[in-house]
Image (cartoon, rainbow, N blue to C red):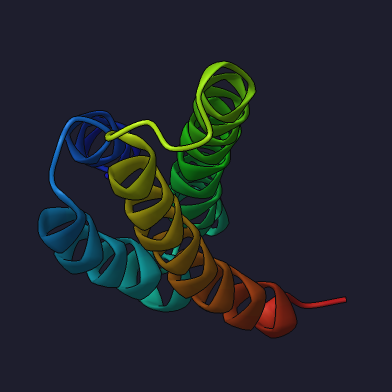
Length: 108
């Protein structure tokens, strides 16, 4: 099951946001309901890894926006980058909610 979870995360990192949302639900189920604590850990870690991926995308997009604004504040691609940034942040936040719910479930 750990190999499955790792493979799923690897696949999701190369997938669309829609597919990632569906896969995150599977990872959440694994993290909540699997019997083995290590399997649950890898389900939770998978969601954390996806959040990190979106954080990296967010950082890259912000850098591109800043670079573009520095050279040409009215550049034609600027609005698309800003729209992409909003989508990336929304997706990261969505995964963050799932992750935070899982952390609350962990035994102390």
